[in-house]
Length: 165
Image 1 (cartoon, one colour):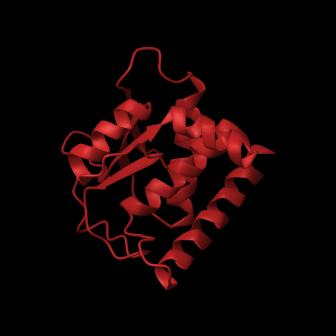
Image 2 (cartoon, rainbow, N blue to C red):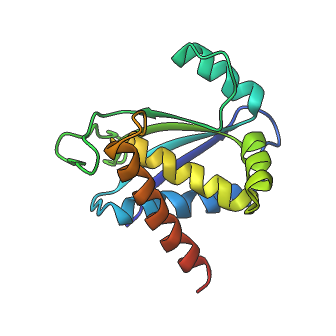
Image 3 (spheres, helix red, strand yellow):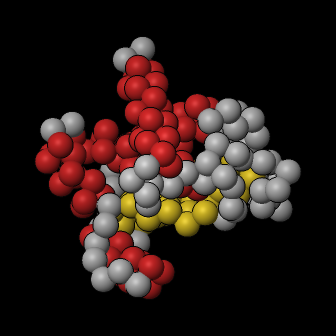
């Protein structure tokens, strides 16, 4: 299935050409794991800590940088994607899931801190954000957070397994 991944950068020369391949693979793995059977569209902004700080302040009134922000186009319950109620892009017919912004600066720092590298961190943040676009949340410390973390682990295992083939 062909999904539309619209990648942009808010700073010149931000991100390597491989970033689009990594992000596309992560989006596709998450959508496949969630059994999404229609073409979807996701917009991804690659930024740095300054850029994501500004977005976090503007849209969430949080005066701090973060690693990833998600802006769902629809309101689905976790695991309850409904293609019939999803917003559609009139030009390509894809179900519009929403937007995400990833701080590559933060991804590199966290990849080093956690010992698994920048590529894995970018893919994890992408999977995390796609799940938010599909209605998952982790604001509580209870079942919703556990459900989201479980899905993240499963999708990352699939993604890492696919990279070894």
